Length: 218
Ligand SMILES: O=C(O)CCC(=O)C(=O)O
Ligand SMILES: [Fe+2]
Image 1 (cartoon, rainbow, N blue to C red):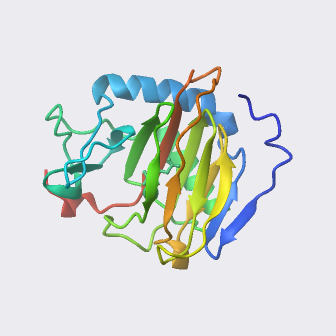
Image 2: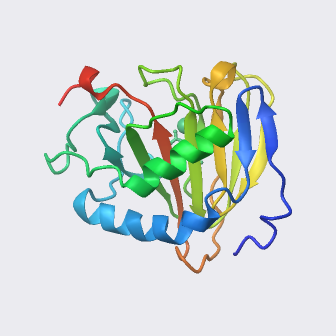
């Protein structure tokens, strides 16, 4: 479903340091989707396993200096893709510029992302409430871009038990959280079966993070 109302939905402060920017990536969105397809030829989408052995419901890949990874060895960033043995694809300039611009708009003018996790949600896929805490640089914010079919995003506080607010995220929406909200709990409800002209039944999410790649294993 096209988001016909992006222009009517307003910038929304979710918490101190956290903001929803409706439609911020709309101008780039078509090209972002095409670029994801190209990147996935080099570093294919795959379903990763949690350290406890459970399959994630999203399929993922990465680009940039390092990529987030999970398997029986734990959650971590790796400089080479364990599936192909090759470096992750370089982060496209357009990705970097979009993420930096969104961070600047949200009040983080110095954000320099080094890793972009690409999540692909098919109908029914979800992401349980979690914190993004595997990054060495927690002074930098997280920039999260939604593409394709909509999803219901939950954004809570610093404690798992804190109340969550829920927002529908549409094609081109961006959420940024950092500062004292950097470790806020967040998650995505199961994606409904619906259609988007650019992605079919899929939702994609780009999650930009600043990592000091030199600290991470090959
Ligand atoms: O898909 C989303 O909107 C959020 C993804 C996320 O939180 C993550 O990859 O850590
Ligand atoms: Fe996350």
